[in-house]
Length: 254
Ligand code: BTN
Image (cartoon, rainbow, N blue to C red; front, side, top):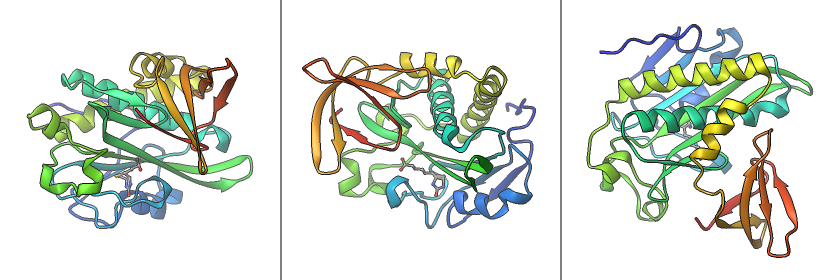
């Protein structure tokens, strides 16, 4: 059995058998909680994804957790923390011998299908952040039957792809340790360098043609780089470059 060796992240852990959503739980207690408190549940009855989507969270089969953070950073820097989390999850998968890529800004994919999503929510006023909640959902040991037909097209689990069962406890410990390392480095240096090294190396997009979806329109572009803020730089066939801010545009066509 491994032991968690962090200074702040996961020093307090709330563990539940079932909750509506660990993000909702986290937001309910965030104001009174310490930086680094973590909510984990075996099951979510109202797991939530980005863009108001549902997140399937069957009992004992995944990692459904949320981290409460109280960094002294401007609210517009919150997406950077999401990328730190994506880098931490991706590196933890590597350690377990699970081949994976990061699909910018914050999905982890195996064989082009999603196995992990991150939902970042925050509270505060302009220029003053009260807290950030980083919700991490990992389809660890889900079986085919846990995924609905429409979701199967784009999502999978580590067990389905690798055929092996993931030790969720070890995975959680590894993620929290790696997250703390990258997060503290970011706060100390005010730079995302360490995270971006991982995000570039593990990118599912860089160098590839992707579709940029803006409202009803779709543009075919090449993903060429991440800038120092973690934004994606794309180039169209005429050589025009554009910097994409996370959350502003979705990217399909992997
Ligand atoms: C996405 O749409 O890609 C983000 C999915 C985030 C799911 C996680 S599971 C733990 C936390 N609680 C939630 O309700 N959602 C996040």
